[in-house]
Image (cartoon, rainbow, N blue to C red):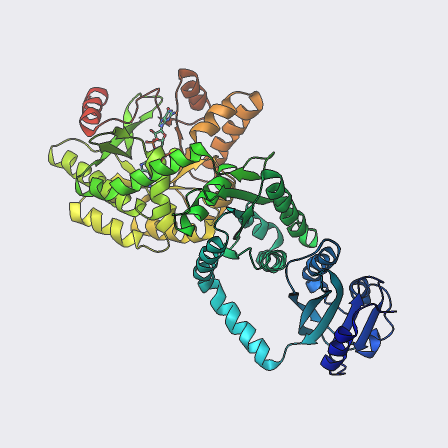
Length: 554
Ligand code: C2E
Ligand code: MG
Ligand code: MG
């Protein structure tokens, strides 16, 4: 016997269209009884309609994860209460075994008694009309671009409604999503992302704005009561959103509590980004909190950004040169150009501090152009003063390689200073986008430049990049060298890396050589070129000229 009020039943019956391509059920939460109407197949469903649907075989397996999240939200809503009156999800379903799947909307309305307690769920599943399908497509196409703006507005409005409460910004992404794409294929990677979007939409209530910021980065905002409630909420997101189709992935969270309510919502979002990035690569922890130390870092980042444009006009960026040596002859065989920022108040700022920030905000291109220009100018200077030049290698940041005409700019510089092209060498670090970089490297090689693969052994894709990209020289990374030198197994790996490189026609140079033992070991392995503090730190151009004169005198 259904205990739902008569009014609800009448409403339910009046809404039925008795079309065999739609399904309605009224589920009495007190007695567990259910009335289904519509599709004949479902007429005798008496048990939990959600269980029945799950086992019916009529839902497209692809939609099952979204359905599961949806049904657990309904069940949870019925048991512990929910502050929404309806939920909906998009699923693919058929209404008879011999039919095709169609795009359907599954809507659940919660019916309540006078005290607000949920007494019944009215569920409807029906295929979208052509108009709805069109609208959804248009909405999908636009929402990806518009969503950050809509999200900002929604967050501002939500924060205004909760003036006296604390607000938490929660951001998460899929750890090493690029590797997921490589492992499972791009199509399944895309499926995972749309599953995360759908699940998040179902999980969040009207007072929890959410948004997909970029491909695999999501953000949601909620009120903050205490740490325990927040952690429970994050764990709930985590458990609902992981385990999609037996894929093996981890979500990484960053949390920032909005302390200064005067800040733009984007700034709070940035804080959550910093918190999320702070625990990248940490195997034990996947939730990072924005804290005081990060606040200081952020402050530093902001002052660097404030100062950088002036620094450019004021010629505060200068080129230092670090010599490259031949281990056997002890002669200088080249140099690497490294940027230094000579700040009028703060003194010398290391690239480790500003390069990552410039890479993020795009300023790195300007810095690189200054250094490329300085390197060409230096080579021209040597030629003009009768000094035999050594090749200078400059760094090319990967950040703009696809958007800027690197080949055109560099060939222009070589022509402008009228220097033999082999004196300017180019360093590019390994990248997960090996194929995209490979194309640019090929064009630079065709133009006549010598290409160096920087920091070999420091990341995940060194070997992949070696396979796809035609470099001339491989630079062994400092940490790879120092860490692997410590064990006999590691030394074997270094030694084989050297012989493997030579086998495929690559020259090799070790960077970060700090001790005599390292130099000796490298030489024994057949690597004659070295760069590092054992020989010389990066020095000013004047100092480099002195060294060059002293070392290469005869
Ligand atoms: P990188 O290109 O791998 O440069 C080598 C770094 O190792 C330099 O750090 C150099 O000073 C340091 N190094 C060299 N020998 C030793 C050693 O024996 N021991 C130790 N501990 N370090 C050594 P630096 O100058 O701080 O530059 C850091 C990174 O910043 C560079 O790594 C490069 O990726 C980037 N960078 C520097 N200048 C530029 C630039 O003009 N453009 C771009 N895109 N990146 C730059
Ligand atoms: Mg380099
Ligand atoms: Mg390097």
